[in-house]
Image (cartoon, rainbow, N blue to C red):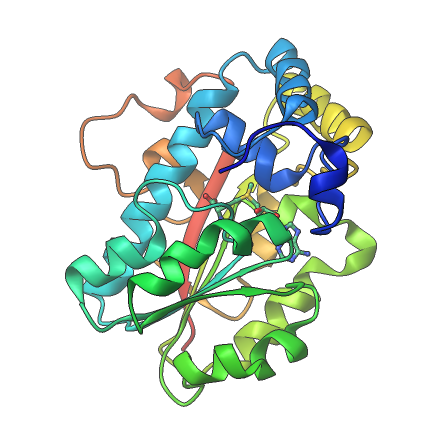
Length: 272
Ligand code: SAM
């Protein structure tokens, strides 16, 4: 990675390093190296409101791993990871293919930096690919030749929207977008969502900071998050704070969770 902070060099690749990006800011909180001063400054501001933001990101990565592992155990062999982020540890294909070596995984992200860093993944195996596309346009995503090559819409698909829907504004119709993906996949497919939740006054403050500094941020209520799963069968334990979703070890009772531990909620559902 070239981390020299020369805006012109990156601008020619469609990357504006003078403003924070969602993918790079997330890389900061995951202790990655693919980020710039603007991204670190944004995270510093968020840390003022939510000191636990690094832990929140770690919880989100852990639940992604637990979810993909569970989906693989349920027999799912195709994963459409929408808003996948920069490659980090325990990416979807590593978790899925550890269980099912020939599981197919397509990563979709609209930030060109993800593809730039995803080429190593592309070389890694024939069952994984990274596509630069806007998930708000499901028809284009689902008809992309790189997607259709690995995702057979006649067989169950895991649709992953992990840590991304709170970056869509209400007028972008996130529920309609989720429905478009779930309408395109057959019975036995699954929907996995994690989402910032308006679970505390601090969460509301963080939402304001996200919107002001990053341009996106819509922390939804549990009811609003539940609406995404309309018509689907929610699997146990339902929509819960991330640490409580199928934990691998002991966890505190819900009333003892901190602001950060309740900042994001997640759930998994099956299409009947
Ligand atoms: N899903 C990963 C995870 O939870 O660990 C990464 C989450 S990261 C916070 C959100 C990602 O969504 C970023 O990489 C960002 O570039 C991407 N993203 C934001 N808006 C998008 C859009 N309209 N289409 C595709 N990707 C988008």
